[in-house]
Image (cartoon, rainbow, N blue to C red; front, side):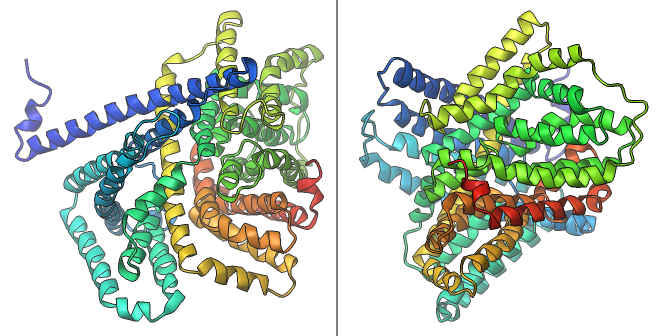
Length: 627
C-alpha cells in the first residue's frame, strides 16, 4: 500500500513542498477551530451578560473584559485565516486587466509587501506584548499579556504562511524582482530622508498618497499598504518607538463596539442558513411579483429588509440573488441589468441598521449608535424610491400575460412564514433604542432568535436545514471579521500618524475656509467619499477620515447623524461603482455575470442614487426627523 505522499516525495524538492503543505494545513486547522469556537463563546458570553443585567438584575462585571480579551484573539486568528485564504481586502481591478505575465509579477509583489510588513512589525509586536506583562486587568486581575500576545502570535502565523508562499511561488524570478523593487524603494526613501524632512507636512504626500496609492493600485492588500506607509513614515521621519504602530493597531481593533462585527456577520450567514431571508423574499414576491417590474421591487425591498438583519452586504446579496434571479431571467430580464440593480440596492442599503459601517462610524467618531440606527432608515428609503423610478421606467412596457397572480391564501401563508424574519430588524432596533442591549450585545439576540427559528422550522415545518454548513460559517465569520478588523487597526495607526503630524489641524482649517461654508463642505465630502469608497472601501476610509472630518462638520453646524448618512451613502455609491468598486465585482460574482455585461446598465441606477444622496444632504429632516 502506497503512502499518500509517496509519488510527491519521489520528485526532487517535493519533500519540502510536502512539509510546507502540512504546516499550512496545521495552521489552518488550529486557527479555524479556535476562531470558530471563539465566535460561539463570544455569542454566549454577551448573551449571558444581557440576561444577567436585564432579566436577573445582577450584571456580570467581568463579562465585557473577558469578551474584550477573547475578541482580540478572534480578530487576529480571523486575520490569519483570511490571509491563508487570500481574502484580505485589496483593489485588484487594475491588476486583473494586466497581461498574464505582468499580473503574475503584481501578485508576487503583493505577497512580498505583506511579508515585508509582517517581518518589520513582528519584533515590535513581541516587545509590545512583553510590556503588557506589568499591566493587570481591573476585573479579572490577570496580566494583560494574555490579551496582547494575540498580536505577535497572529502576526507570526501570517509571516510563516507568507514565507511558505514565497517558496511555493511558481516564478522565483517574479519573487526576486518584487524583493528588489521593494528594496530599491526603501533605499530611495532612506537616501531622500533629508529632502523629505525639509518638505514639512508635504512629506505626508510621499508616504500617505504616493506610497499608499501605489501599493493599493498594484493590488497589495489594503492592510499592508496602510501598515507599510505608517511604518516607513515613523521609522524615517520621526523618533517614535515603532511599538507605537502595534499599540495603535491594538487600539483600533479593541473597541468593544467592534465585537458586533463578527457577530453580525455570523447573524447574516445564519439567517441565510435558516431560510429566513428566502421566506421574506417569497412573501414579497407573492405580494407584488405580478406587477410590471414587480420582482425588481421585491429585490429592492428584500435588500432593505435583509440588510436590517445581517449588516453584511455580501451576505445580503448572496441571500437575495439566488432566490429571485432565476424567475427574473425567465421573465426576460437581462442578466447584466439584474446585477446592476443588485449592486445599486447594495449601495442603497448601506445606512440600514445594523450596517457594519454604522457601527464603525460610531466607534471611531463617538456618534450615538442608537441615533445612527434610528437615522439610517429613511435615507435608505429615499434612495430606494429613486431606484424605483428607474425600475418603473425600464419595465413600463413589460408583457406579463404569462405571470400568475398569487391568491389571497398564498399571500397569507407566505406572510406567516416570513413574519419572524420581518420582525427581526424591528426587534434589533428596539433592543438598542430601549436599552435592553448595547449595539454590541444586540447581535447575540438576533443570533439566538435565528437559531430558534431554524430549529422550529426544521422540527415543525419540515424545512431542510443544512447543519453541516455551521462550522464553515463560523470559520467564514472569523475570516471576514479578521480581514475587516485588522484594516481598522492599520487605518487607526495611519490616522494617528496623520494626527500627530498636525495634518488634521491643517485639514480642518482648509476645509473651514471653503467658500460657501457648510454647503461646499458637504459637496466636497460627497465627492471625496465616493472616490474613497471606490478605492479603499467604506470601513478603511471612515476610520481614516471620520475622526478628522466629523469635528469640522460639527463646527459648520451639520448634524452628526446627517453627515454620517451622507458619508455612508457616498461611500456606498463608490463601493458599487465600476471600474474600481469592489462591491460591484462582488455582485457580479454572486449573480454569475461577467462585469462587462453590467457596466452600462448600472449607470442610470447610480445617477438616481446620486440624486437621492443630494436630497439627503440638502434636507436634514430625512436623517434626523425621527431622532
